[in-house]
Length: 102
Image (cartoon, rainbow, N blue to C red):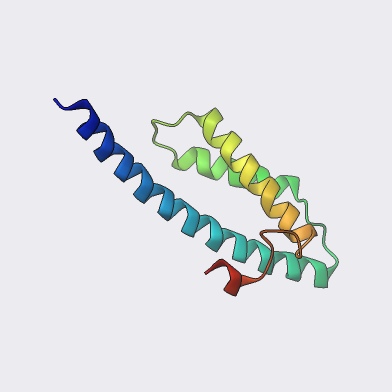
């Protein structure tokens, strides 16, 4: 077995997954931005702890591993924290300019 060749193959797969993750995170960000506008117009708070707990429970339920539930929770908590930041300050880096993302 050629270790370097095997590593290179796995790293190419990781790069492909990373491209998909970036695209999906940008899609999620655009939706979060839209939700932020709706909440602002309705006078609703950005932070909804019960909703975030439902999201965390939902992703835990979908998880089939090998990622642990704790690791998945940590990742989604970080994602939701960033989405809240974008909803609170739409002009912050990573904010609403959808055309800028593409």
